[in-house]
Length: 136
Image (cartoon, rainbow, N blue to C red; front, side):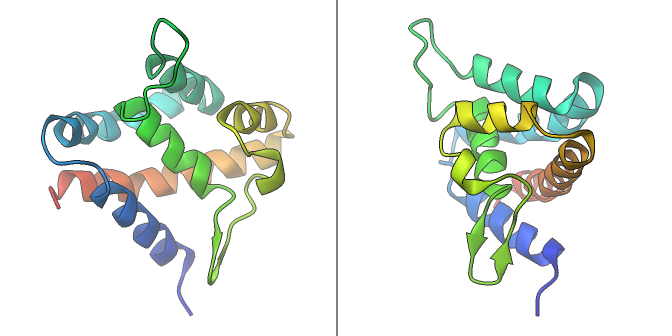
């Protein structure tokens, strides 16, 4: 049986390896290094909302390849992730089908659940940061 840490590591590795080589990967590397600090300094929901706004163009269209959106999506997809022996329930999958639904769900959580989701996100980001810096 694998630990949650091993499951996080596998998920993070797959997501980091999916980022195209070149400038996008280099930009993501530096951005992911500061992401945990941004969450701790500004708040979990505030950081996620900021990243989503940074990844949106003037026509309010999400730029899917933007480093902010890539990291946001990693978190959005991880917190309710279910596959094989991974059964995350940090947020409810049925209520987090869109990015807006995800933010809305986080905003409506009680404090204990919200802090648990934040803690899990910080643990995931440690793996993301490590793999991004390993230049895989």
